[in-house]
Amino acid sequence: MSIAKLGAGAGAAALVLGGGGWGMSVLFSNMMPTFKTLKEIGGTGYDTKYAKDFKSLFVDDGSDKNKDWWEWSYKNRWLSDKDGSEESTKPKNKFKDLKGGFKRKDSDSDNFLNKKCKDAYGAESAKVKKDANDNDEFEERDVWRYCSIGGIKPVLVSENSSGYESDKFGDKSGLKGKLVSVKKEDKDSTDWFWEIREHEFRYGKGGDAVTGTGSQSETTNSIFRELFDGTRKGTVKETCKEAYEATQNGTDTHKFHESDIKKFCFLIPDGLNNS
Image 1 (tube, rainbow, N blue to C red):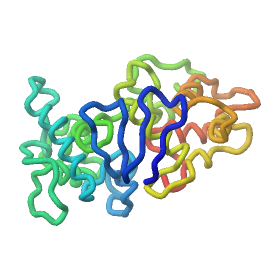
Image 2: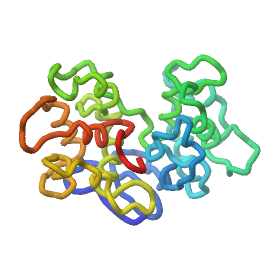
Image 3: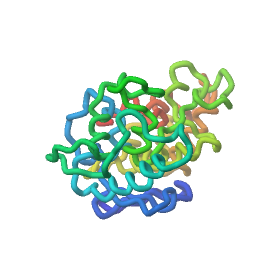
Image 4: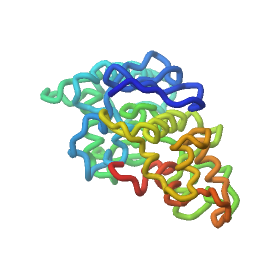
């Protein structure tokens, strides 16, 4: 992937691309190694499984180029949780008793972090859940903790107790359960997501992408289109924040189209080509 940086105002921690992979500047501690995501590597192996909607958020399990990242996640996340005093954060079910961070995909050993994440990616969505009890289920918290870039699943608007007025997009039925929170109290779980979403909006997804997803915004009187074209300042997160607080049936000339909100503010984009 070519070297790129998030545009000005994207936040204190810019997401930097370079050296054939992703890296975080100051958002993450412990010097996270560069890596390739499932989206960058490509392939269709998980297209009907749990990882299908999160390919740009999960690290590819099979690429040798990701070996350092998997060893880093094992050391700084898995071992830290396993040896910690907090029982609720200890690895559960499928993620117990690991031997290390990475084994090549042709290896027979399964007790390595990248192998367990591979299994989670390829699981039926119903098998990845909160408070997983059965031996064939994956604890959702563990999957996001050990397999995703940010190490935590982003909080949704519906999960935050400080809501929006009933006539605002942020409280609309069918939207709030899919919108990613922009509240300050949720920043620890969402900042990493918004940095990635910003990059996708500007530059696109995947290793060779050059056209941002913002090019798929509505073309008429669209605030998101103005953001993409550069005639409006700000970030995707800031613009989604404004959208959540906007009146659903507003009459402003420049407006938030619901279709754009679904494309750029949903955890799982709705309506984007090649999403």
